[in-house]
Amino acid sequence: MAMRNWQTAAPQWIARIHGEMPEATPAELRKALRAAASDFHCGTSWGKKVWAKHCRVYLARMAGRGDFRADGKETVWPADIVFPWRGESGA
Image (cartoon, rainbow, N blue to C red; front, side, top):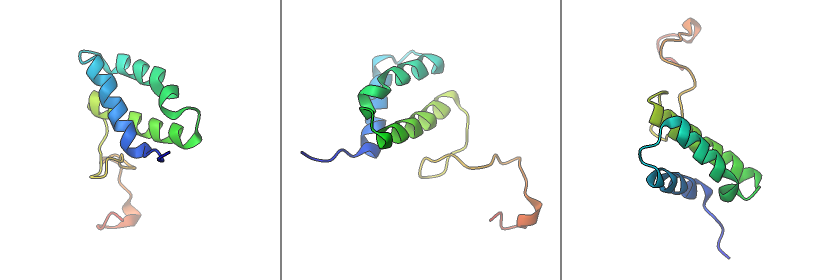
């Protein structure tokens, strides 16, 4: 039995769910994703973490909210929050 690649499987499941209801609002998609969660993760803690992460990113993109890095993760702080002690580098 091959091991499951959770990071690859989650976006595929989400795309399938969205494909089944293309005219759905973000709220309807959120409900559909929650309903499909247990089928995806089968009760495993890692599956739950991966599903929640991918759903969060997907729903934020669908709603037009959030800023994302190249790897798909949300940025930690919005651009309007300034940390003066970090200097010009922003690090």
